[in-house]
Amino acid sequence: MKPFRHLATATAPDGSELKLYRHDADYVIRVNGVELMSTRRRHSEERLAHAACAPLHSASGASALIGGLGFGFTLRAALHLLPADARVVVAEILREVIDWNRDPSYALAGDALADARVELRHDDVANVLRSNPAAFDAIMLDVDNGADSLVTKGNARLYDDAGIHAATAALRPGGRLVYWSAGNDPAFVKALRRAGLAVESERVRAHVTSGSFHFLFVARREGR
Image (cartoon, rainbow, N blue to C red; front, top):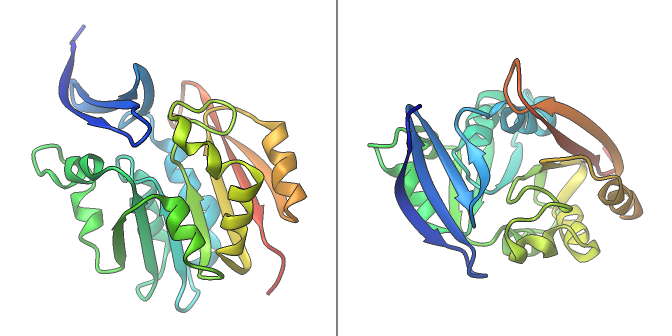
C-alpha cells in the first residue's frame, strides 16, 4: 500500500489545521486529522454544481457563487454547465488552498481558475453573501462536512438561522441555494424551510459507482 505523503499545511482562522497529502495519484485534505475532501471522491461535488446550475444552462447573464474552492471540482462542473456570459464568484478563506490549486505541480484547479468567467475572492463566503444582496441565481456552499458534522468551528455561522437568512437574501428570485453535506440532516432541512425556502434532499454517492453517500440540500427561493 502506498503511503500518504504530506505536502503542505495551512491554519484556518479558528486555529484548525488543514494538511494536504498526496496518495499515489490522488490528493487529500484533512482538517485536524479528519478527511475533508479527496480528488478520488468527487462525484457529489460535481452533482452539487449540477443541482444548482443545470437550470441556468441557457440563461443570459447568470451569476453563481461557490463557497469553498476545495479541489475545484464544483467549479469545473459549474463552468461546464453555465453559458459563456455567466459570472462565477468563488470565495475561499484560505490563501494556502488557493495557492495549492494554482500550483502547476499539483494539477488541481489552476485551469478552471483561469477561466474568464471566474472571479476569485480570498474572503470568507459569509462576507460575500452579506455584501451581495439579490446578486446570485445559484449559490453552492461546500465549506465543511455539514451543519451536523462540522470539522471547523468557525463555519457554524453559515448553518444557523442568521447564516441561512444571509444566503437567502443573496439569491435572486427563483434562485437556488445548495448545501453539500457528508450526511443527512433533517433538522437543517427544517431550518431551511423555516426561512421560507422550498427544499429537497438528494442522496448522492461520493464516488460515481461505489463508496459512501453524501447529501445535497437543494433550496429554492420563490419567484420568477
